[in-house]
Image (cartoon, rainbow, N blue to C red; front, side, top):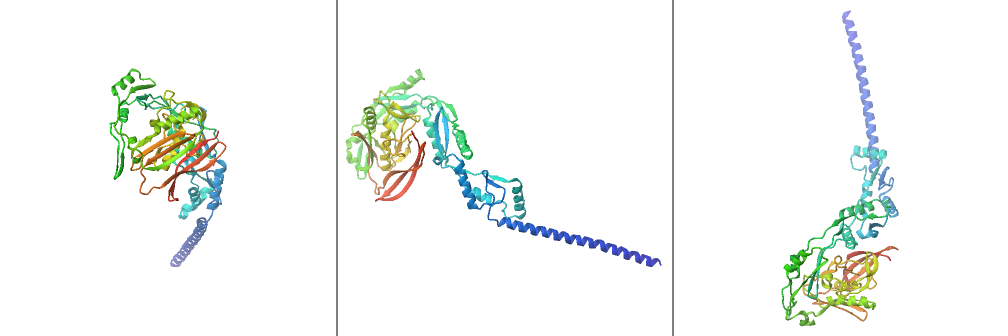
Length: 499
């Protein structure tokens, strides 16, 4: 009897354990099925995300909703929205004078393509869990993608330099010029210097803020003091050893004469020491003249006309006097290979004592009378001749307004102490400049020796913007051979104010 009871107890215990294990098995099977279904649903959802041909919901670019749009549609929407919201120029102000930064001038644009491609590829990185997590996160919180601003930093830097040169109370460094047999050194004056980096950041921020509606940006400046007058450096530039001019024909070569020039360093130093705040210092130049000059060699030494240009002028007596004075300073100038021509250094400071008259000039964005008015016509005429002669431009600036004597984009303005016109003789042979002012025509011709293959050079311009306030022009240096265009290179983008 006891054995039967023991057997019965073992059977009941076994049945109980079987029922418990069966429950676990059923639960495990159900759990696997649920996990499988969830994985399958997740995979189906992931596959839908990966193969979606539009941008997911909750995505914005620069605050513009691009949800549900294709890549092409999103690009069109962003482009149109930016055009409608953005200003096409930024206004800068200094002492009530306004300057305009044209968006085209610094080649500023937003990288729409990259932003849209990035938006489209959100939640499509290839990892299912990560993509699903990002997709849900964007749906719940949204995401706003900024646009990268692309611009030409060199163009922006040059534009700020142009503004610096036009500031009414700008810094003026000590300089010098030669008038007859005198060396005249002008003292520098402290002035405003633009904080370039700060102004750049303000301009770029204004462009990036597509809701920008601030009336203007104040140009940030600091007070800058001029460098001390360096008499020894001036002496190194002025001093020349005398030599005669000569030329050879085999090979053809010209060696220009050099007039010996010197001055007393001690005398000039003493003058500066005795009155450090004087406006200018004058000292005598000591000349030693060569026996043979380039002019003595005759035109035979410069057999070929390399480039020429002429402009018309109205015979206003005072203005015509200024044209002739500037032209006479340049006429006959010989530039050796590698040398740089400076208009301001060659023509000198335009003063009453030098014979210049009052005539119309552009100053601080306005037309007014000033000593030497009209000399920019000579620099502009020479600029076009230099282009035709295939010489290298080193420095050139456009006027505030379009000139009457050359088309927009073909002028070269100058101002003593700030704006200069410079070019370098990048040829292997010397050049001779011939300028004249007569009968209503100002002319500039450049002579030298033609190369074995001489390309035709000319300056062409294209208007890229014309509004009631401003005109933006691009200028191109066009290279041709036998009437066929070889190359076309953009060299400047100029902005002019409208009257």
